[in-house]
Length: 239
Length: 302
Image 1 (cartoon, rainbow over the protein chains, first blue to last red):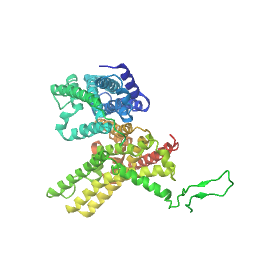
Image 2 (image 1 turned 135 degrees about the vertical axis):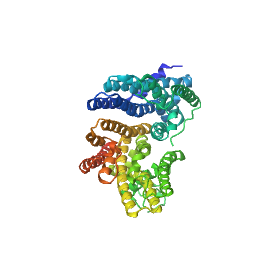
Image 3 (image 1 turned 30 degrees about the vertical axis):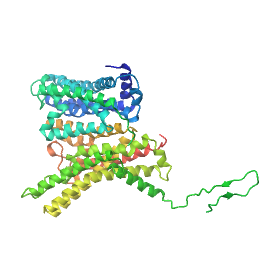
Image 4 (image 1 turned 90 degrees about the vertical axis):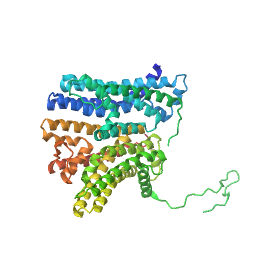
């Protein structure tokens, strides 16, 4: 199910040149904010939770997920070089699975690790906050990568649709319509974090059992369907 | 001009055959025409006009969302008895719907410049009688106009709705004028930033992500830190933190000069003195993005 050559190519596509720049800038930015806030406000659980929940989980993880998830397959389909990969005797679900592993690894590396570092800087893991948000970021990385990888195989405008989901659905509708929060990767991952952190430090609107089922369900279904899409991929010309 | 085929006089061994090619003797439309065309094509293209049905979906959808929200606000204002003004201020509208505006510029700025770079059609533009400054200005102006349509149209709907509901005309006209100035400023600023980021990459998808990252990451960071500054009673810092993201810059300018209510935590926007700094930063950013674009297109061959 895992093909090292495909993985190597995907790593190079993701971490090569300019695309990597934005991946590096975001975590550095988060850590810089954490340092500034710590110097500014001192160690405080509420503040740490605000920065990690409001900036790291709500903004940074989805953005890195979009870049890594769609970036793992989107450009190849876009410029047509995916045909060379598809022509090789590698199963298409294997290609998807390998790319998913790589996307998950990259998203975790660039989102969960800085979240943990920022959490340590903010309040030295008081009340398990740093660990809780790191776990949320890890869990969210898997679901986001699977979801956006699927988008990459379905649409040429995957980045836009991924951003629409992350910004309009999760941020805008999520804050206005409480029901929308049930269908949000961010809330599912926060419910896992809620379990880990001390009482009241992290809040989620979704119960843990439901969140776990939805997280696993979305990841598995998205990966399976992406494999199916790749089996019958039609290469379209530039519009 | 002769079109007859024949031979030109010469000696027997070498003769040139005139096979009837004609040189162009029509009207040459010149540089201004090329610039205008580039402007109108980019403006039409940013709403998907003249492109495939698929690429009309997103810009039209975003424009529809903007108008729908303002229609709902108008409907509320007309249907509720005893209202004397609209439910929100004209200047607040763009701040509330900044995600939609951000998505529009993120999806359309790369459309305007990245594909020219990727398919190497920029040298073809410059083989026409246009200069670098024409290309940059046309794209910049087109993107600004597209954003102005997107943000101005809902304000017009609000204004017409306010007049239909027989609200005080002078009051509404003043608010509408202030709102239009604010969205004009917002359009220029966002168009500049969007085009700069998009022009740096020939990849459309990556351009989209980079533009949205510049807009939302800065806003997310600024609003998070502002909220913390508010909690820790350092209200003085809130004003200056607003300088670091595009939408809070606009918020600050319109709070200082255009009678808006700030969306900053605590609702205390910058005063007139800090407002001047905000305005200067906005103008510097616009001038800066123009300069960066001009620099970017210095090497046309790419």
